[in-house]
Length: 149
Image 1 (cartoon, rainbow, N blue to C red):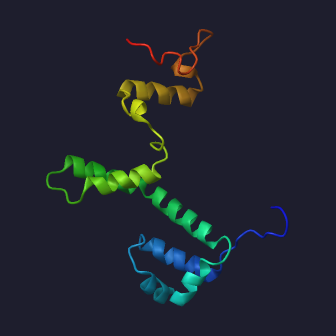
Image 2 (spheres, one colour; image 1 turned 30 degrees about the vertical axis):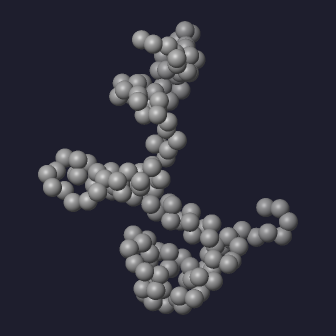
């Protein structure tokens, strides 16, 4: 830290409100959440004027939602493999686009990879070997791009 800036440190009330909302998976109103933990609703909105609060709050939300990816994927699998499963796949798609960092930033070419190509890339990353090849005759990453098979 430079200068006299202090790192943001949430109060107990802030942490209590956040914990309550996360236990509800954010499926509650601000008014109800504030009442449940004894926080004045007006204070909740004033907290956003404090330096660092908004960033901390959003980071905590993002972390909570990122940790829910497994549940979203399970719901997607159930919807894809069950007859008449409720729900829309578009909401899950948007959720994954936002929070599944393994899929963020993929372009059209990356999405068109075959399963075998994807697996080879994952194996290469796991072993730190370009294209999954061992030995001296390594092909640099992206060397085969632009060629046709």
